[in-house]
Structures are given as structure tokens and as C-alpha cells.
Length: 169
Length: 169
Image 1 (cartoon, rainbow over the protein chains, first blue to last red):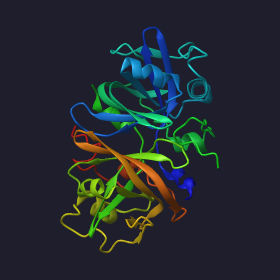
Image 2 (cartoon, chains in turn cyan, blue):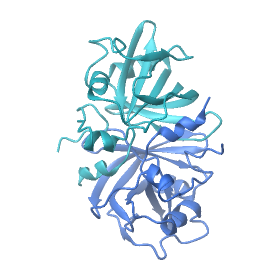
Image 3 (cartoon, chains in turn purple, orange):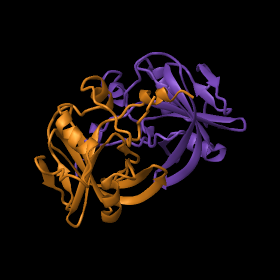
Image 4 (tube, each protein chain N blue to C red):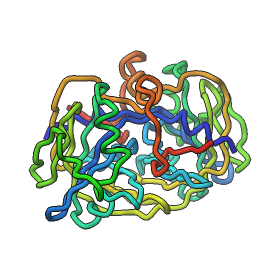
């Protein structure tokens, strides 16, 4: 089996955030996918179980998604993608606004955002699959969304070992 | 809530196929997402419950994914994306090969394919969410994979009402 074919799948790049009480975290994912087009559309996102964001989201039952723009740099992606919210306050020095659901939304180098309730968490081994219901969504800036392909080929970004799409080969 | 922000999410474009006994069908989706990077990676795909492919896949517990190349045309996408396997034999006049799991794999205008077992089916309202485990995967041709963005902006393709990402606005 040639696992390199998994690199042929296409994605965007997102910062997902959650907050429970005073405890906040957020992380970078490529796994945001719209599943239904109902009045309140359903989406999924997969997050590594070891990520602080997954732990907090399971308690708060709420999660916000920010769609990164092509202008997102390694300073922002490094902070949210390669460091843990257990060690640093990721909101410090980051542009954000408070969502209607009380969860901060990253607005720095972001084209739009979606506020969600968590309907279900499906155990997928190393990762949790969150089934989400869209509650709000607004445009932030008219820019090109970042694709995972652009991140790899133009920004020359790497994939951390805990990512859904990590391949050590 | 501005549902148009859902257009900022990025995807690829795929033909998923399944077969139970002599009954085959396949359809076009944009919802293929790698969820885990385990020895046998897990993926998900969402398919409208009314699609013949969803019905057959739930019986056969197997599904194959073909990654469309940028060269895929509306003849191929129209056959698999806008017509039902209940009405026509979608394999007729289409290039394909048989997978190791006995499920045909579309190879026409395809860069690579993945053979999967279905681990779980999660009811998401209008759509079924299939949790898949990769069994095989091979490259077909070194071409650029089709993105959903390219399909909309360059090929000027439309989204059928049963799609996960349909938006009538």
C-alpha cells in the first residue's frame, strides 16, 4: 500500500478554538469538512486526542472555526500548530474576537469564521472526530483561503506528528 | 448567519464506488478527508443517503476512492455526479480496474486510488458519514489532483442539490 497517495487529497487550513471556564485553547487543522447542507449545516473536524483543544472542546461542547487566508505566516501557524495551549496562552499577541457562543474566534489572517455546537464526538483511535452544527458564520476579509497544498508548496510548511495527515515516510 | 462562508472551505473531488453482488454504483463527492495517520489510516466520506452508492456501501462494507485529476471533464463528472446508478450502468464507457477487494475503481482522469473497509456509518441527517480504514492505495498517473475550487472556477461546474456543500442562495 502506497500511503503517499494520501498527499493527493486536498484540504484547507483552519484554526479551531474552544474554551471551558477560563481555559482556552486552539489548534491548526486541515480536517474541516461540510457534511450536510441543512438549515443548520453539519460539519466535521478531526483533532488529535492529545491536543488540549480536543480536551477542552469535549467539556464545552462548543467550537469555533477560522478559515486561514493565504497570508497566514509561520508565526501564527507555528503558535497554533506546533505549540500546546497547556504551555502558552495562544491568545496573547493574536488578533481575535469573542463569538456569540462565548468562544474566542481567531481573526488574524482569517477570511471567515463559523461558530458551532458539538453534536457528537466519535472515537477514531488517535483522533476524535467532532460532528458539528453551524450556529453562526461571518466573513472577516475578502482574501484567498489558504489551502493545505499552498501551505506545503509555497510556504514550505511542515506537518506535525500529531496531525491527521502526518506521514513519516 | 452567512452560509456563503462555507464556500471558503477547500476540498478535492473524488469518485467513490461500491458493489454488492452484481450491483454497482459510484458517485462524485468532495468530502474525502484523512482522519488518522495510523498504520492503516482512517478516512471519512459523507454521501447523501438517497444516493445509490450509500445504499450499496452500507451492505458491502467496502468502498473505493478515486482522486480525480484536473483533466476530469463534465462528461465523466456528469455521469457520476448528476445521474443515478439506479438508472444507468456507470461503468459502461468508463475506464476502471477491479480492486483487490472486488470493488471496481474508476481510473479515467484519476491520479490515485484508495481501497477501504467501512468501519462505521454515522447518521448525520440527510447524509451518512462513512468511517473508512485504508487497505490499499496506488498511484495511477502523475497529474494535478482536481480541487473543488478548480471545478467551480475553471471548469464552471455546478453543485447538485444532494451534495454536502449545496447552497441554494
